[in-house]
Length: 400
Picture 1 (tube, rainbow, N blue to C red):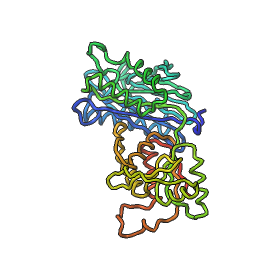
Picture 2 (cartoon, helix red, strand yellow):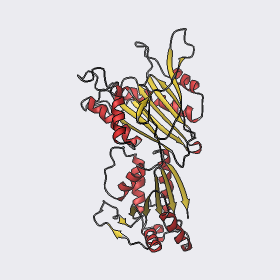
Picture 3 (spheres, one colour):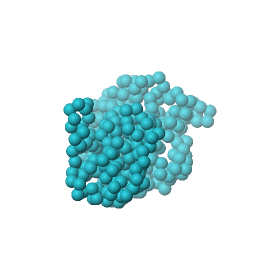
Picture 4 (cartoon, one colour):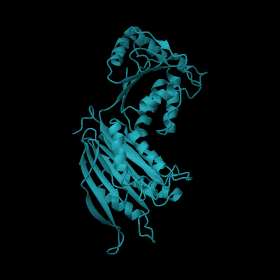
């Protein structure tokens, strides 16, 4: 059994559209079932590319995700998808392929593959073979020998530092026809992944998925011939981040707040001038303002020994909420300023502890301030919700 205090399953994905297409024909859906500590990832590839492929892959991925969240049996899930999706009448192939990965709190992974490139297990920095059961599934009311599809099912027990990697055929078939890879990248991708992990054993799921898709793009000379998608699940020790904001309700709790922050095992962000002053006083450490850290509309950050980032409070947190709502792509977090720095630290963390003081700041109740300037606790709840639903982070809230 995986101890969630010692091990964490990071899930990352990256996608790239076919050259000159404005939408991706692949669909990736990721879900963290908070109460069950389950991670579910679905990758679906629609036939062809463009809007039609996008609609079909999205329908497939949505059905697969909804069935798995409700613990529907795998075969029932597959049959429901097959009975819903049409089959190409000329080529007699499904309009959409899919891979489903469902990992529970014990590290037990259930995998279903239908016509996508084979899912890879990386163990001890090497690609390992996976035992797969092949099952023939028929469409409802199909005549004998007609509308039969082969699915592959696997059950794995994951270990620390294991990775599961799945991708669409836009990755495996990239570079096809080139002199050095006439049949595509299918035979070279294992070596590429092993070399990456050998050079950077702690490479994140987010970065690894991006590097694989970017290399596929290079194989096609920066003009992808198909939609390319990659999903990576990585079992490792969790990276913890503390975000502390707001003074405690009672001044008698100031020392307790300082103890929680100073003893925290992980990176630390402090948001708010009053909160910073309390920590400076209680810990006996000086605060210096980073005058050069100027971003449009945001006060500069500060520095204090033992704190990784110290910022202004409600305005910076509000800017962070907007960045989280936009769902900034994995390769586009190069913005400057305190909110962007917070975002980068959040994306690199797995378990995020939000320590929130509940003392009312009179300034935030001023009716002359903009309506959208919500009180601190509502902003923090928005951040927690976004991190859980959109970024699959484990979030723990503590009010003092």
